[in-house]
Amino acid sequence: MRRTPEAHPASYWAATAGAPPDLAAADADVETDVVIVGGGFTGLSTAYHLNQQGRKCVLLEANDIGWGASGRNGGIAVPRYKHTFPAIEARYGREVALDLYQVAHSALNILERIIADCRIDCGFSRCGHITPMVHQRDERRFAADVRWLADRVGDKIPYMLDAAELEDRIGTKFYAAGYFEPRGGGIHPLRYCHGLAQALEERGVQLFVRTPAIAWQRDQNGITVETPKARIRGKCLLIATNAYSDLTGGTSQLKRRVVPMVSSLIATAPLPNEVRHSVLRHGNLVTDAKRLTNYYRVTPCNRLMFGGRGGATSKESPSIYARIERDMLAIFPQLRGTPIEYRWSGRVAVTVDGFPHAGALNERVFYAMGYNGRGVALSAFLGHVLAQYACGEPVAAGPLTKGRFEPIPFHFLRVPAKQAAITYFKLLDALGF
Ligand SMILES: Cc1cc2nc3c(=O)[nH]c(=O)nc-3n(C[C@H](O)[C@H](O)[C@H](O)COP(=O)(O)OP(=O)(O)OC[C@H]3O[C@@H](n4cnc5c(N)ncnc54)[C@H](O)[C@@H]3O)c2cc1C
Image: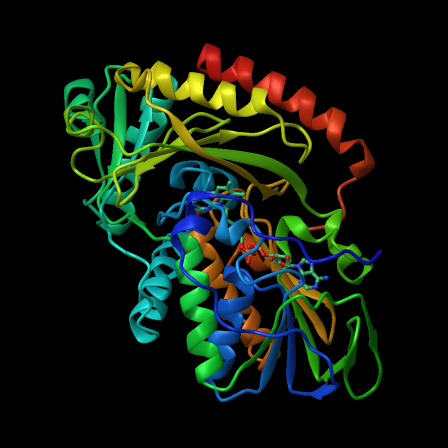
């Protein structure tokens, strides 16, 4: 299947990112060392790390740089996973949990280092991240996480917030408690993508946009990737197509390993001063503790950006955004009457075990994907992991590189299964299980 390149969605990020780097489609054959497919956070971080090691690489993006989840997300970067650390230890053992703690922090550090090294103007700031909750079960889970960090790794930085502290920080009486991670940070995700692509181009990396990898063939000496107008030849192929792995047949071996879930965002008009002071006045970022999370932040121009689950398919519908607006007003009744000026959606890649995965399809083809909505920081790390595969020096990262990541049985039933899962998770979230 060959698809026509698509424009960026009309998101707040697209409206404020400025012009994208001036990149062209591939129209002549190229010989390189490493071919990267996917021009989002993962592919760009991979190209960055290969370039740092002096390896020649070519990056192919079917649409525009940052067109996928990377240019549409909440831009919230946290040194955490979907699971708490005690839950990780209970499932995988202490050693793995300790390793994954290091990985989570090194991911955020790598992101920060790339931004500094490439001088990317994407508003990166470690402004602090809150995970608020309404149910006692979540409060116990996160309080256990605070204790785990202090006991196991001597990390006493995250702490619990009570309802009064949350009201001060978030500006709502909606929650009973919260977990505060002062090291969490935020970026303008599309500016980060543009800035990194620009820096890589200046450093000699060839990046092609509007260039889908349609198919690839392996032979004894390397890989040939077919694109509409050119063949790109390299010694190995790195695939970073995440929840958009179904765009062409070239990445079809991976599309059944993740379930694409839609996440949707709205952004209000700039908040009037009297309201602005009551909403996230310390500049923190928020992702709540529910299974079907809501996440939000205030933009530099004082809009509230608020996200949550989208529909069961990628089909746009006003009712999805109306529901997200209702969720926002339940938390911030003071925003009633504030117009919504942006609405957009993107795909999150969900995996069976809740972790992203990097690995090999064969000795020349590698992949990294499946961030479960936690890819802003972790993709910076997995870009490094992918680059190391190409250099023949694999990095071990517990379940991220060793866990099972097979095609999901009955993947073709994903739409009704997603509808059933959404209903089930909604019930669990409401009951606090
Ligand atoms: C609405 C939304 C909100 C989110 N919020 C957060 C958040 O606040 N914090 C967080 O940590 N994570 C968040 N995430 C998740 C995060 O955005 C992703 O984990 C991350 O962007 C994944 O990056 P990626 O480069 O792997 O994939 P993507 O950015 O999706 O990039 C994949 C790219 O591959 C390209 N492609 C696909 N097939 C081909 C092909 N055959 N040839 C060439 N190119 C191809 C696509 O065009 C696409 O641009 C959110 C995701 C969404 C959708």
